[in-house]
Length: 109
Image (cartoon, rainbow, N blue to C red; front, side, top):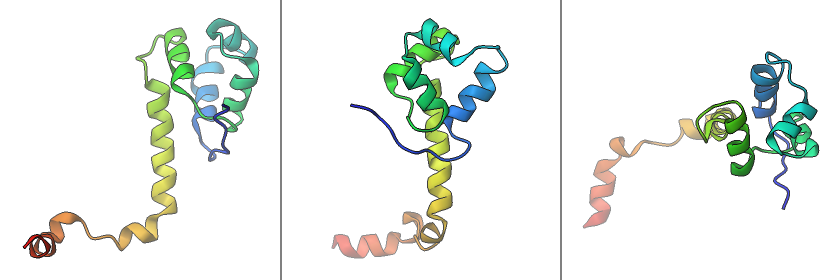
């Protein structure tokens, strides 16, 4: 199964390219050979057409000597940021539970 999606600008692919490939003078082909991730997969991650999977994450983190889950966590940060922007107006209308405890207690009776 291909884990594809169109991701947002500033996504994990841009992050991977700008923070890891470019500074280390690593091409996508080099990264593919060193991590055993297909060139198609690397290209699709970089272009925002594919998400980082746990399988890709452990290979990338091994190569870059990072803690497993690093790229998944970065991807999650981007995704949450996009969700916050997308749902801003809706979130403003949601009352936190700490401000609705009297309502919760009334329903428990």
